[in-house]
Image (tube, rainbow, N blue to C red; front, top):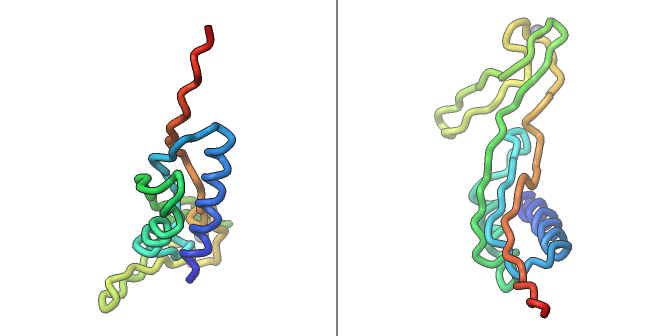
Length: 129
Ligand SMILES: [Zn+2]
């Protein structure tokens, strides 16, 4: 299960980050997931729930921002790609060819799997007199 191992890495990186900031709890997480990773959002959410259970991240809100694929072509085109609609699967497959000239292209975005931001609760710092 690709989503599970991906989320395992993400969750451990977030917990590591939380520790660095003395987080008592991690309450919200923003992820940027490129469409070309082909990671299923539902599976990611499920993995997140399982992996954070019983940790300082339990119950954290998960925000997933999908990043559309973008390409650059030697003809000068730079931007979005066309999609091949497979209605029988209710899925749109990005076509990784230049929409203008049909050449192979360089992918400039859509493969990211990033932790964009996290929201933490920190331990109250004892007041010193
Ligand atoms: Zn082109």
